[in-house]
Image (cartoon, rainbow, N blue to C red; front, side, top):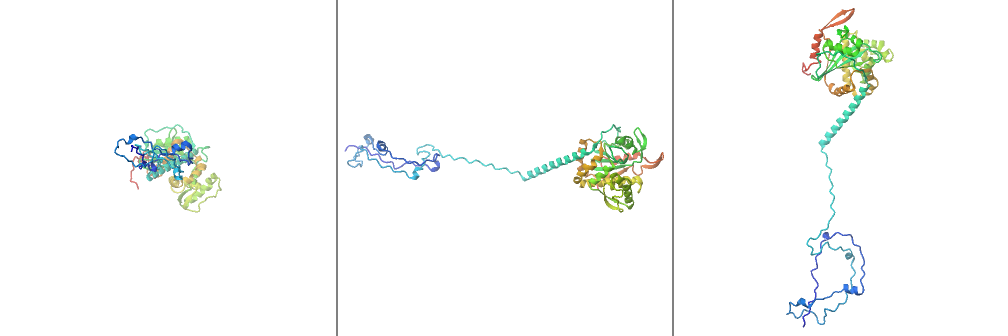
Length: 443
């Protein structure tokens, strides 16, 4: 039997299919119905042929029978097989991403998830610090706005030429002195009046003290270019500048600025802060009623018998009652007790200002501050207002100049005056209001 070609055997080890995850990403396949071809195309595509040349098995000459049945013709074309219609699962089948023989099969690329950045939380301590700083800035801006508004209501007076005393004490950078002048003028724009009260308010940063030094109006002193006269006459001659020069020349101290207030301005400031608490004797209460009836009620436009005190005792005095109390002169030791009452009113006013500063702003702007005049500029007063919250915490001291034992009563030209030992009072001022360190321990 002639050597027949070995029939082509069907491969029993088909290529492995890749997992679904390794398949190549493709667009979803549409299900289509493939119609079977007809004619020669169908015959050629749906048949299997065994066209094996005889030389394939030439290396096995001893084999005679290859299990081919008799009558089998390998060159006879078999009948075409009927093509099976693909199932629904096969219609949606996706081919593998790579064949079995690929060296490095391409893996299916999946879209990377976008990383979600977590918001970094600010530490609690840092948030607290930021809140405190923001609150401080807001309070500072609000305080500055209110201060500048109040300062703008004051009447600014251009400073007149002054004679600066050389070698006066208190020129160090740790003191600031403002002369408070209370005049008996009804209107500062119309008349100058007389200096009814004079208080040196000295802020001492070295000793952390604030001194109120009342200057006696009847002190017989030398007025520059005017000779000797009473201290309050200097204001009548040349205004606040001449008064400051007189104080510097006789008491050898530096006076930086002044603040002048009229009767109505003084009463308005006290009313703005809700009054002052004062303890009066029966004689003082009677004197207050007399001053109210004689001049103050008429000045304020009220009835002559209004706001009388029933008797002595502790009362919260209104503005015009406190003004009348500060003007009492013929009860007690004349002008010495008068200056003491003025310092007491100022002390109680500062205490009220530290408690009712916010409530006093509207009244200060409307009625009180327009009655005050000063030679300080707006920047100077603003810087002074920034120090006010700290200065109010200083120890408040008070004294009168000339001090007891440094003066004697005299009669000059028919007028009662005080002969003053100016050198002794200079030493007192240097050791108290203008001291560079505390002389006594803090209480």
